[in-house]
Length: 248
Image 1 (cartoon, rainbow, N blue to C red):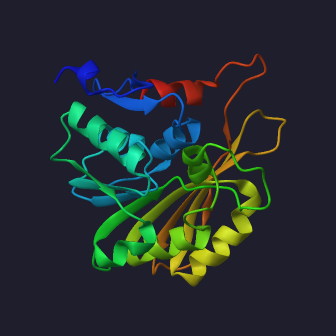
Image 2 (cartoon, rainbow, N blue to C red):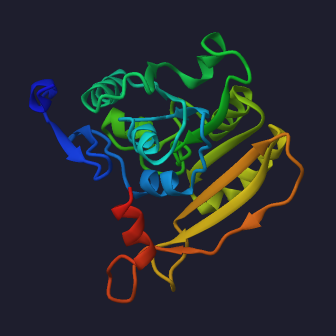
């Protein structure tokens, strides 16, 4: 396929620097960031897994994970038609149509699409912000991606639990100030928090991200991993973050 022939207005193709894969993004809409890349490093996908990625945006997480894992299949779910269309074209461009399905659907309606317990793993980089507590971006696409307009934190966790088999694994990136709420809802939805990593921009700064794993119907007990520091004293990526991007 001629890559430039599938681009629409304002779109570009960005290299993912893994397996020769690229991704289509619209410069005027929401583009993936470091949180998505760090989540793909944190996720543990097993050989033969069927995985779902909710709030997939342009599909960066399943595309990267298809290169980094031996999963059998990924299903990417996105509510915004234009974002789902970009994700679908990126999947086709990378020759991954047999590995990744893209579904344009409200995650709260997935009960009509998938039976309970359909997946071994669920990943999600959801909207972080509660409406009314932060200024909403005037661009609808960016607002939906960043604010809980189309789905709430509870929606995300509840639907993830329903989609997962018993002992299935849930992986999410979110904001540290909502960690207490996240853990409460996960426990209520039978997703036992098992692993947590806190991300700091610099060693002397407050954290700005958390990476959390839950296991459905597991016993209690959570491992707190060492902190992930993004920048060193000189403002450059730390060796670990440089390695993550080199291996992204």
